[in-house]
Image 1 (cartoon, rainbow, N blue to C red):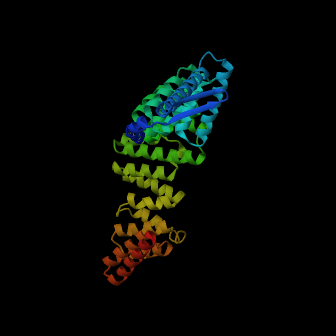
Image 2 (cartoon, rainbow, N blue to C red; image 1 turned 30 degrees about the vertical axis):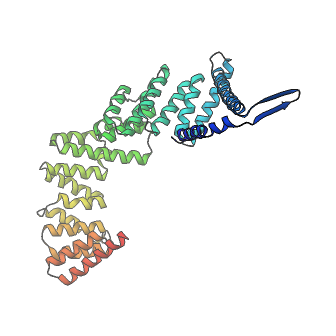
Image 3 (tube, helix red, strand yellow; image 1 turned 60 degrees about the horizontal axis):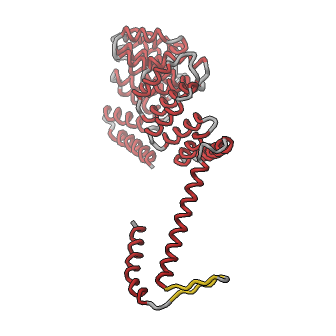
Length: 394
């Protein structure tokens, strides 16, 4: 727009001064060695303008011709390969700097005469993915797929990009084409695990967990966490269907997996959901005798009812050994509330607040104190809870 406005001003200025130039009686005299040129002022100005335009046109023609010649397929192969290598290097440096537009452009230029164009197309697809240029990305992957050896790599790459986009259904369709098995490559198996987790397909994930473990694809810590989450979710899904599904799911787990406390607790809750509380209580009692842990103490009030006295007696035996265990004190306080033993619950909540003065403990203590009619102390407990909340917000 600015350029057009400038041209318009030049034209208007030319129209304005044209009459004065026509009326002018001056002339131009040029002498170079033995050559002499004498012409009117108006013709001289037009000649200068024409010479400038001719020079610009000639420059553009020469540049265009050189560009065509340098990119011609008739140039020696060595020249074209050298240029492709240079463009590929520029693209690689742009990728390292995460300059995605420059990387895409350079990699495409390098692919035209490169020795390994498939590599360039993969790099260009990656740059396009980071720019959210989906159509271009798929086009580059199609060009890379022309190489027979790259078919699996193209499917893996496209599945990963679809997963990153959130297109889980399309990604799963491509992943099923790859058929993840024990013979699959490490990237395919890792991609399968990520996609199954994103889709919450815990059954499919469970099937490849032994392969992930055997091949050491994940670290021990990540594998343990993934196994735990998978098993708990499988139990929760089974619990929402039937007791038969729960038992079948539990039988699927290894002995080590069954001993994992969060998984064990999920199984107990699933049994309670299907009116198998007696069995759940028996298993819980056995586990508490063998290895009383914080997780078991935390889950006990959700499994035990006010009528279960035997497990209360068992827990009472831990009073000396777990006196300084906050989870034990909270567990005993909740059990006391179940049987409406408010003074005993108050004592345990006070111990929990002493061991860990968190907001939830102070609020629970305040409610018990209100039940006992001790409103002054309840108000102080509420103040402690408010103070902790204010410090957390700060």
